[in-house]
Length: 197
Image (cartoon, rainbow, N blue to C red):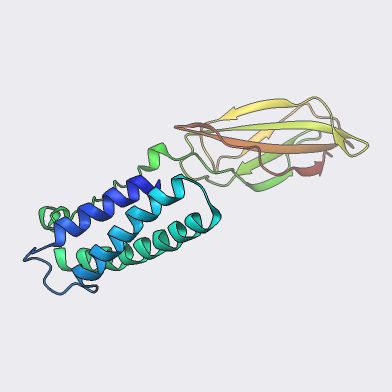
């Protein structure tokens, strides 16, 4: 939050708490808060003209404003008893909850990486990743410790064993996985290796 926005929010809180019957026992006096608000506003203006000293004073007042806002926010929340109208009368704004749908999916991890029932097969099982709707697995033969060309396999579910066939026995393969969520693909997982039998 910029200094200007913080100053406006602080002023709104002071106004909202002044003579507010829902919050009679403030942890900081309104007189002290008013003096701090005046000092902070003046410090913001002085810092605009530059000068190391003026900027240092502005930062000091900013920290004091934030500290007092935190104290007041805890008090207001405790004394609002879940009533949003009472809470907002204080001048504070309620933070909107973050929907899990808007968060990126987590990087998946392998639950198992094992041999198949036949030669030239490997099986892969993924652990469930947060907010993932589907997954992509890729594998490549290793040459001198470096993966070659990747082959990708898509799957909808974690915990489901996926059998990969047509591999070369005696060759070590690298495996990685990524998940797909509402905001797109996660990063690729760390590389796991296994030799095909």
